[in-house]
Amino acid sequence: MVKIHIPNNHPRAESLRIREKLVEGFRKGVVVPEGLIAHGRGECFDYLIGEKTQPFAFKAEKAAVALLLLSNHPVISVNGNSAALCPTEIVKLAYLTGSKVEVNLFHRTFERERTIEKILREQGLDEVLGVGENASGTIPTVCSLRCRVDPRGLLVADTVLLSIEDGDRTMAYRKSGKNVIAVDLNPFSRTAIWASITIVDNVVRAFPNMIKLAKNLKKENKETLKKILETYNNDKILKEAVKFINQRLVRLGHEKVFGFSLTEEVLQLAKLNSVRLKG
Ligand code: PTJ
Image (cartoon, rainbow, N blue to C red):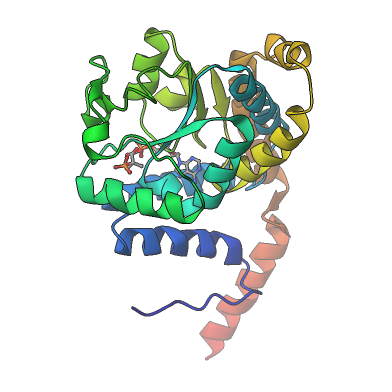
């Protein structure tokens, strides 16, 4: 397979590198074709938030870590896209917060489950839940194959951290009394709206941020962690995200587009066009 060379000075180098991880995951059978489409949707929302962790996301990440640390049975749910993008970070966060890790796929095949299990084990994870026969439990209110869960994991979880997925599961889990932490770049999605804590950030930034936060928050007592959660309001966070996107677009529309002033761009284009006309 041809390995694409991405020059470091390419203006979109980081974004291209992330794409390559997804494509590699697709070739290895970790990511489904639908996952590539899902990534494109995520990229679009990432543009809108400036491809940076914004304050609304950081506040959600902090609350998420506090919740994981306070939970009795926290579980990190892994699908194809998250396994391709941040397997090392998933394992680190699980270790720091005492969370179990379970493979739970929408496009469920035993082969994919095993491939993802292998990736997670390579990162040092001893116990990977939800693979094959181990997913012997059912959450009947989840209408896809994601209803099949591990009795040691998602079935008994009081808090579930999930990322990059559509909303049916989040809604069902919330209705059954579980806390859901969702990493989703789209603040308008059903997942984002139904989650207890919505992290409007890219998983490639959210997980490393949560690892740093977990290292610090682990040292705090329960009362401090509870206070973080008491002052957290997800509705407010989602509104902040939408307001941020709105204000950013208005600002860009008036002044600058990705570092160029509009006038400057128009002048550059005019120059190019005139050269072409002369030629
Ligand atoms: O691996 P499987 O079989 O479980 O399949 C998983 C996919 C991704 C195919 C499935 O869950 C799906 O179709 O998801 P959706 O409905 O496309 O939703 C994905 C959501 O994640 C969208 O709201 C995207 O904006 C968002 N998203 C995409 N990439 C990222 C992301 N959010 C955070 N970080 C990303 N890198």
